[in-house]
Length: 179
Image (cartoon, rainbow, N blue to C red):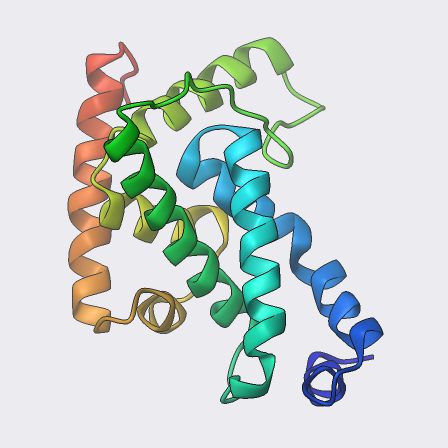
């Protein structure tokens, strides 16, 4: 079944068709949320909220990329989670679950350490820069797709990516990682 057919059927209330879409994008959405939030429990909560929100709003889906649409919903829910954290002043310690970026062929311990340092530094970036970098580098979205997710121009995406990469590079240098 293809996305377009699943979306049509989902709009008519077909739960199985929507579950097909969930199956197609669930891992990517969870990985995205983990990278944005820095821990699995919050990421799982945000993902669950995002899928429920998507199901409730599927009839209003205007077409285009379902992937961009669900990532946009998830990005908004991640932002809401950050706002709740600020109000509670309760930012949990980062416990990164690396679902898809550890290379089992390489030196796993060393690779894990590097990936963890990148994740720690990524979490220190301003939200919009972290969002742009995560969507580009980990989700491989095009600039146009990122602009749709972030609801901004491609020029703004380019700017946020550039500033985010510079800031990330500087943070990694501070942590002892040179290019």
